[in-house]
Image 1 (cartoon, rainbow, N blue to C red):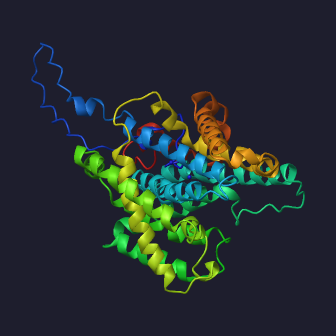
Image 2 (image 1 turned 120 degrees about the vertical axis):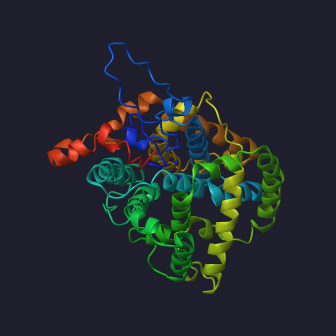
Image 3 (image 1 turned 90 degrees about the vertical axis):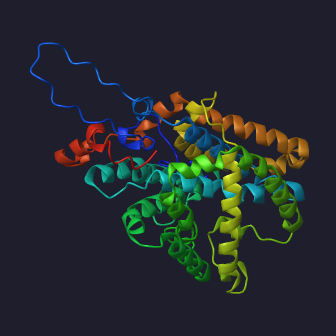
Length: 400
């Protein structure tokens, strides 16, 4: 469900990927007089001294979001027959990917398709997509006894859709940054996507279109907006809001189709009238926005024991799917009915939360770097490789 690269995160990052909080510029040094006396060292403001450091708030947010993504995926095989679990699943699905995508957009807002940025886009998004698309296909063939399952780079398998969507969204960033009303236009695109049937599997265009407003919203945000949601009054207001949303979701859970939350189908594909598509697009966007704000309001601001794990969410995201699919291929839910009981669902929840936590740790990130952050200097011209280095990329700050 983070960078994602990018909302999902890797360990070793260029300066270009660090949090672009605005800092006051130090005043230019006056020309030194021709005096043998040494000049005094200029005072560096604390904000400027820490400008290159990672903001723990966003690492905390990404880790907590990836835990919600993984746990919600783990609930899928065991939630049938439980109205409460289905309602909780719907509640989490309302905002966990929107939160990840908003953060991805926020750290893409200075992307202008410079050569160095494009190189990082290929190494951090395209390569992981190809590697894990192949890996999930092989896992399906061997784990599910389906040797004829086809390879396809245009029909993303399971959770790899996010990488493909992120690639498209990031390439379109200069356009969204240039137009006058980007968010309303993105909402219109999403609404039109909900009216279009039969395109769900082609490059996941339905999800690309229907999740687009969240990415564009992230592009439009500034640090002050995140400071606003962290205010004490917002945190207090978030509690009754989430409680009310949980009650409402429990009420509608038996009657609302889950396809609306996946954004992978149009209204017609879900057996709904055409007007339900735009209605659900705008309604779910508003709900996701409110719940995302409530989620971000309670994300810890400072360093915690899991802050370091926020840098490894790409590994947690891409690897936890193998655990979920193995659980499904082996038919463990049918073989062990107790897993669908409240106690079993608690065991599934805690197990997946622990597993995705381990998958975000630094050793896993280092071991997987060949696939999630490969060194591709050999594939690019020397001038492009030089431009993508830390010094040249520092002003870019395109991803986190």
